[in-house]
Image (cartoon, rainbow, N blue to C red; front, side, top):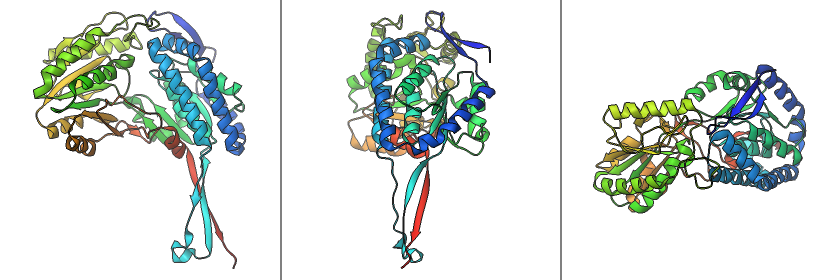
Amino acid sequence: MSEAIEVINPYTGTCVGKVPRGGAAEVDAAVRRAKEAMQAMRNMPLHRRAAILKKTSQLLQERAEAFAQLITQESGKTIRETRAEVARAAAIFEYAAEEARRLHGETLPFDAFPNGENHIGFYLREPVGIVGAITPWNVPLALAAHKIAPALASGNCVVLKPAEQTPLNALRLAQALREAGLPEGALEVVTGYGEEAGDALVTHPDVGFLSFTGSREVGIGLPARAGYKRVALELGGNSPIIVTQSADIERAAEAIVRGGYAVAGQLCISVQRILVHRTVREVLLEKLIARIRQLRLGDPLDEATDVGVLISKEACDRVEKAVQEAVQAGAKAAIGGKRIGPAAFEPTLLTDVRQDMPIAINEAFAPLTLLIEFDTLDEAIAMANATPYGLNAGIYTRDIEEALSAANAIVAGSVMINEVPTFRSDLMPYGGRKQSGLGREGVRFAMEEMTETKVVCIQRLI
């Protein structure tokens, strides 16, 4: 297409680059090139795949500052956050290099059943072929790494559609992979809008596996439109953290602020609902307000900035409206609650929030946390489960029975004990329950999703 998409810095409002506005034709061409590279990737020895991934990790480390500066300009995240993201992406590629060497099946004891006498065999893990990857704008490089690295480690080709707000780092990553020795066509990047390029990738019949990270509203309808292909969905969240009577309040407060306002709250595992026992409400509230007050807003490229901007003016409009409606319904702003620029919103803590309020049910995706009181742990667990989401949850407690009860009863992909739900290790099986998604990420677990099992059985002629 001759049209271009402008990439806008959400802090300054200026254009930081332009990319092609790809659509169905560009996706189809990219898939054709990926198909031509499939045999080369499938036949590539594991040590060679590992070497390419390792070299990519090294290139990311060498170019870390340039990547961080670029992501900050595209996304409005603080420079400290984007430096951490680049380091994380480099670690994901390095870990994938290690896992590439461990891709294997195992032998099968056919003679464990009578009809299997004189049979021996094993199973292999083979690539699905082409992985379609659609990534979001909030963690654009690391989440691209979470899709690309395991796909390549397991011998697949990838067609990547990055978010239209943050495509420049994806193109730079593709360049690094080519420099690392990745065959032509093994990674294709198509820039464009979701309803054009993204939809074409979702429905393309030659894509064997679709990995999507984005909103619940978009993702929930993808399996029906994807056709006969496997689908992994990483969708939204509304992460609760339970703070019990026995909790270390000091540590809980510090972690909640860290987990609630990183990336201006624009993470699917940001702390949103703080479920606190009524007896420790006031002391926790005091400590939270003191820490939130210390957060510094400003230029995301400034080393001293703690909280950057939202991705767009429209996102800020949405947050402003949600907070106003909650206050009108009886919530109170203990701190913050106001817009301070076209795309900037104060770090906000609302109290007197009821679980039945829309702001407590829906995903905020903003620098916003909600304080809700409870009297019993069973009540807190019921509130933790009272949303359509089930991604990550957490509990702060010194009581092992409380911790285990919460871990058992909360419906979520992960339950963190004495840690906020914003914690994620890139090696863990990460994913959600309910409407938070399908499948699991984390290099080894993603490789399992992106491969097919083939059984080889041999009858001994004796």
